[in-house]
Length: 223
Image 1 (cartoon, rainbow, N blue to C red):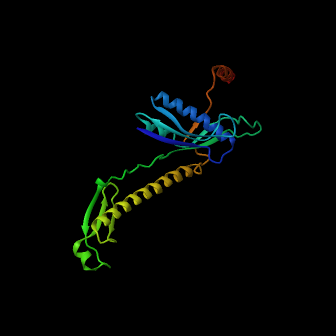
Image 2 (cartoon, rainbow, N blue to C red):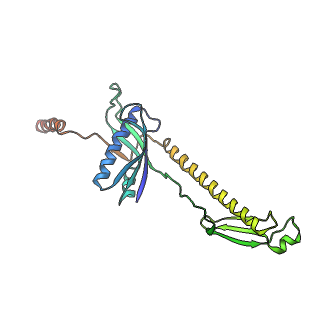
Image 3 (tube, one colour):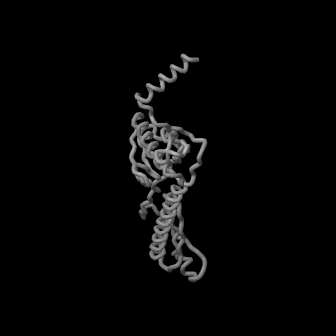
């Protein structure tokens, strides 16, 4: 089982692209601990080295869907800006949403088409109607149906019906493919700042943690 997750800094400042890189590393480490495999499918770098405007990541393994759900929504990286010391802002937001990458491809095979001879009205005289030269073709996998009666010969109508079915299937796949791409682009504009589903912070090193613990102990003793 595999899932694709798109992480995007949206239209946020350069710190959001930096935060995305930090969150990506945290996500990959979390996945490794849960015996899941990750692969970066697409990356769009940010203006600063080591930052990303967006990353499409594939997550595979048992429990991939549940893991992806835990990383879906508005993500917050809580840390001071590494670029602007003057700003007091510490919350940098990233959107993460599962997305579809490819649409299923339908291989057109004539054996998947049911051909039925039928009669239709219209120009052509009584000979065409009595001989049942019209063709009703049904592509079973997609359910697409075409009826062709433009020619007097059944074989010609059958050939035209096959061509029409092939064209409609290919056109449908093109439309579906464009819809997938459009849906992915919309994710970039879905970033909502505030009310994050997940907050992550830089890990505190042991050297930094010791003075903090001593400070807390002195406060408790003084109180």
